[in-house]
Image (tube, rainbow, N blue to C red; front, side):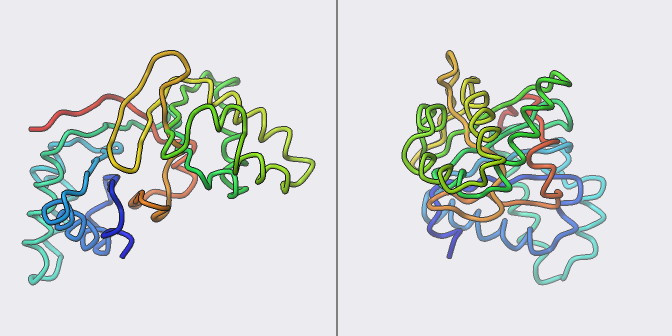
Length: 230
């Protein structure tokens, strides 16, 4: 039901993606929703080329050979369809991508990860790309609304670090994602982006998490370039 009710499906491909059959089943459903419900789909290629997914080469070829006969054709079709869409190419260790949503500050582990990300930026000069999904950059920067409420309930020994990290991250240019469309912004710190990699669906946003460890979403995901449709 989460897929059907989402307006935007963000699908992350990694080298091991095709080895997880449930991921491929979800992908088939996502592409069905794109065709039938006009759902927007954004593919993200993490440490794997768009052509590898499109042509189903290397580990994708091996994994599909071992799939159940009644599903493989649908998997292949869905992979080709999505890899033909324009998307993002992510490379490891270059950029930390942080996705902010309305409920971001209610998840204390997200705030802990954000503190680590900002430490890496200061100490290792790591780049940071914030994504704001259905929440304004100013709400995160000034910690208003649900951000204010959530921080009031946080542990005293952590809240100051959380506040500092939120202000620092929200001052960067990033991407702005809205429930009804995908947007790319970028002037001043007022571009928008959201803290990354949701492990399921929040609201109208579905972030499909594929074969990457939870920590990778904050520390290792990197943006290399925007890929074009083939």
